[in-house]
Structures are given as structure tokens and as C-alpha cells.
Length: 222
Image (cartoon, rainbow, N blue to C red; front, top):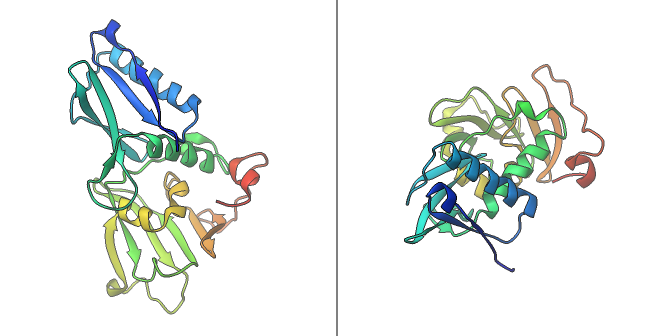
């Protein structure tokens, strides 16, 4: 896959330039990122080596390339802790994916991004099953509020021995199909069958319809 590069020139702000590497994201998203960085720096932000910045649920790290240039790295989505790639592909792709998935049902002012550094609760059957659901409650500083469970009625989720806490990053790397839905707000239930999205229900049990022309309408499923 071809690695593309774009240099964000920031000399007019007396700031190091930033080299962006990518391969899969669309140019529109790279332009958005570039304009966001320029606007932040023009307003007084300064980015330095090893500084982090959260974008959507993900985060990037600024890294010195040379005395005049910074580059960017992100977690590589393998699930290996602290393993990075010099790219912003995952960060910008997930941002668009989560936004477009939510907009398949509701306005984007409902977006509620967690951080992949937060934790979540999963049932002990979650990784093995293809029939599962996602449900989110109010988050805390280190807790995303997400719960991921199987649909086996004989697997008691009120029994703490059937539950465990893991980082949201680890969970998403093991079940990548959940990533699209992680910016949904609280009190919705998202169901999957055969590892594919099935339905979205509100807290009253009402099934929400997919908007015509939206991402999920065009794709059928994720």
C-alpha cells in the first residue's frame, strides 16, 4: 500500500512543520486535520516532541523528525500495548467511520467519543461469541461507560465472576466491528448477529431506523 506524505508548513507561526503520513484516508480528512492544526497554532497552541492529542476516540503523538520538523504516530491497532506506527490512518479513518455510523441514525451533535485509553466491562463470553450487544452508561475518568456482553440468557451478567474489565483498545482490537459504534451516546443498545450489526434500540426498547442514503444504508452492514 502506497504511503503518502503531506508537510504542514507552519513557519509563518514560528512553529516546527509537521509531516503527516497516511495511506488509506481520503484527502478531505487530511485537509481537515491540516486546517485544524493551523488554526490551533494560530491561536497559540504549541506542539512538542512526545505531546499527545486526542482526535475522536484515538490519540496521536507528536515526535521529532529533525530540528525543524515533527511527525506523528498512532497505536497500530494490533492490540500490542505501546506499539505505534508513523501514520494517522487509524485516527482519521475511525473518526469518519464513527461520525458517519452515528449519522446513520441521528444528528452528529449526539457524538460522545470515549478514549481508547479508558476501560470497559466485558462478559467472559464476549470474544468467543458472534451474537452480542453493546450498551453504554455514563462514563467516569478512566471508565468509558461501555458494556459488551453476549446474548446467552444462561450467562448471568449480574454475576461478577462472568465479567472482567479491559482497556477499550484491547477490546476493540479483538472485536474490530464494534469500533464504528463507540461514539454513540448513553442508553442505546446495539445488537450484533453473526458478528454483523443487527439493530439499534433506544432506552424505551424502540428500534431506530437507518436513514436513507446514510453509511449503513449504503453498506447494508459494517
